[in-house]
Length: 113
Length: 113
Image 1: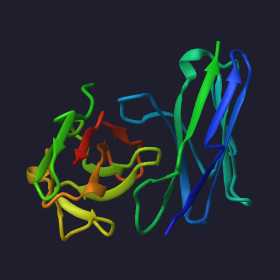
Image 2: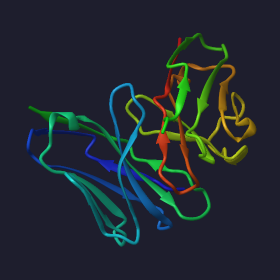
Image 3: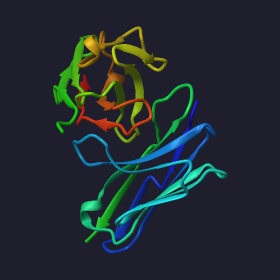
Image 4: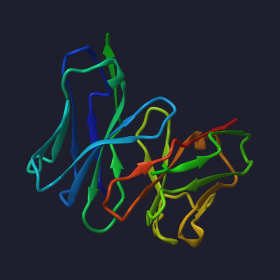
């Protein structure tokens, strides 16, 4: 089945700096890659997603890039703010067969004011 | 639109007892998922429903876990008997169709003592 690896497990940045979180996946049939933000005591919330026919997608301070050949995708957050502090999860979904998201292990991002 | 509703928010039980969790998905969402999230890990799929039929329950410990989705709307996840290792957050999610973005509830935090 699909295996998603996520790095780093923790990331501390100064407010205003950029943060990058990287994920790799194993299943070449995966074609949908969402990113979720989880705050304490809440469920994961979708912040951005990308499909395999697109290499990059941007939404204000958040961007995601996808390298399908290398099977890795990354989340980029620019001009980080304290409210960006949370746990971020990447995930992958295949386009055939078992079609439920497989999640990475999460990255705890702390933005220091 | 109203989000995914889950109850209870917290539950503490002793091992070998039984427990049930309830989920009400977003109206009109055909696909419903139960995920288990152990502290410090990413969500792991337990079961996926399409309307009221099971699509994938390959990772559900069927000797102790059961789930149903009557009338293709609400769903209940049950554990009987509970073990210490079942301590986790149980997340319910729904999506319009398979492959569309998942929307998560805030989960039920289960502690088994």
